[in-house]
Image 1 (cartoon, helix red, strand yellow):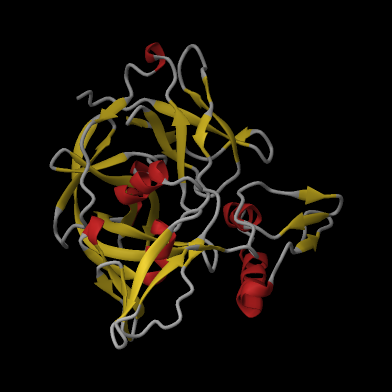
Image 2: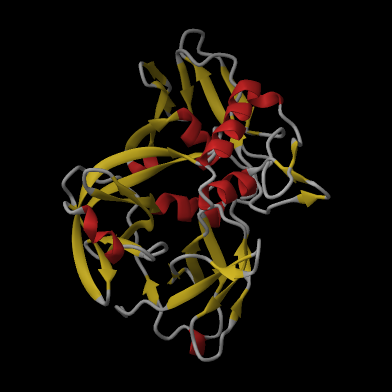
Length: 320
């Protein structure tokens, strides 16, 4: 296995300029894998003498992965090839590793957190302690897209940093990559609308309703997760699942339903003096530090719940 990871440069389709930092790439099942952070991405260039343009293999909108077609072998000689992976979630304290400045460094798993992208888009991430010293942040900037390992098995993709009393990193578990490659529809979110959420089995496992909400055991990762995230991971076009009411023993087929009232595209969509309220606009505001405007837009999402449909917002002098 080659330990060298080749840098790739991400181009922002909003203004065709380079984004801050650099995303990393690695080869998995003959695809080039990186992350887009829900920012509008036009294309990606390998940072090589040939400046080879890499075309997307799949458009992923339900999580922040980028999956590209693998370019010619001559362009990817130094990009890391991944042959094995591990989907099961790790216990706290488990050592994981990542390559930084061509050196393998170890970190401790701190558990899992749920992070929101919009109020209906959320993912579960592995949280790791990067450093006790927050001044070490420069060392980790630009590592988004790095493969992360446990005992030489790929367990996820590094995506972001959190600076609080210490420095923490967030890793998107490899199950998101596996499901992204397996799904037919990666451009929409899906949910299950059940007759009852009590005393109900989804497939082999029972829904559990407690103080943290609806949860279900998810066999691929050997872990209980929120039912919404389960639906996001498993939902796909024309996909059905067997449910069972444990009180009546009645069995029913349920089809995953596509959220139809939300635009989760990562394109910044303009129409004269209006912008479309979608993930692309929300993430654009995040990346440009417009927190007050972002909070206003998210509150619109929350207050209107699922009734929003094709919302357009007027702007003037770069103010919405």
